Image 1 (cartoon, rainbow, N blue to C red):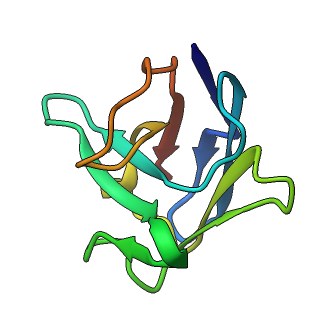
Image 2: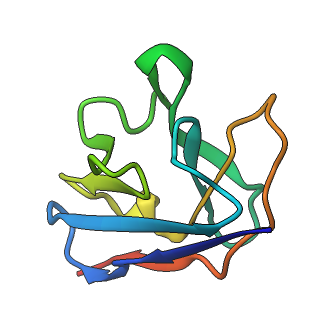
Length: 116
């Protein structure tokens, strides 16, 4: 079984930055394919960014140029650097396998609130 723990969320003013972390443990050797999702109140969960096979990276159009997905050298922690945050980025952020891959159990997520 794989455990995913998200952290790093918080309250930030518009234009600010946050860096989220996703720590994977359990029956996972390394993070090779993984994504960041978010779910805002009353909305469906959406994919924000993902690391894919071969080193490919994809971003949702709404975050391109502002968010950067990465992972540590040990491939056990994935990050999401979020810059130029907007109120519409407010959501609970989760990490999990990207669409097309078998999903892990969802973690608790980490709340990001962008507000002045």
